[in-house]
Length: 230
Image 1 (cartoon, rainbow, N blue to C red):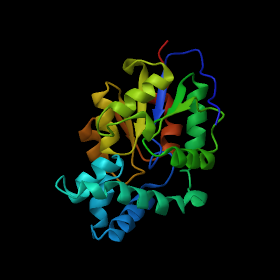
Image 2: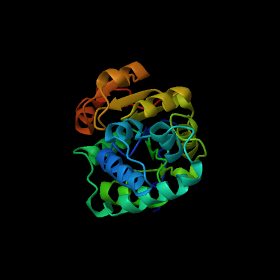
Image 3: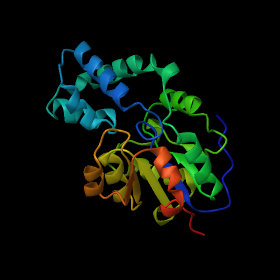
C-alpha cells in the first residue's frame, strides 16, 4: 500500500493497532491458546490475555516461562499466525476508529500505525480499517528486534514519521504500549478496548485513558492530540 504523503508538521500520532483500532485482542488470545495446545501446552486463557500486546518471543516467555523449550517458538508462533489468518476477513474495527484517525490527521498530525505484527497481519488490518487515505506509514515485526515493552517499536514508528519523542503521542490499549512509549519518551493515551483496566493503564503511566476510539474522538480537543507541535 502506498503511504499517504506526510503533512508539513513534525507531530506524529502513533496508533497501536490490535486491541486499539481493531477488535482483535480476544481473537489473538484464542488463536495463541489453540497454537499452544497444538504443541502440547495447556495454558489458561487469562494468562495469555495478560500477555497480548507483547511480541511472540516475550509472550511465550510470559505464558510458558523463560526456561521453556525455545526451539518450539517458531513453530508455535507459526501456528498462531496460520490460525489467526483464518479470521482476516472478519476483523472488525472499533466504532469510530477510522474517524479518529481522520480527525487526528485533520488537525495536522502524521498518522503512523505502530504494530509488531507480521506484514500480512498489518495489511489485513489496514484493509478492514479502511483509512489508508490518512495513514502516512506503518511498522511491522520486520522493523524491530526487541518487542514491547521494549521501546524499539515506538522508536521505529518515530523514525517512519521523522519525529522526535517530544513531538509525538502514542495511543494504545495495554500496559506494554504505555511502558514502551514511556521508555521512548513518548506520552501514551490509553484505551480500555483490549481488556486492561483504567487503573492498570494509569499506573503504567498513561497520561489519559478513554473507553474506546469513539470516546477519544469526542474529546479529541481536550486530549494530547488536540493539535501537533509546530
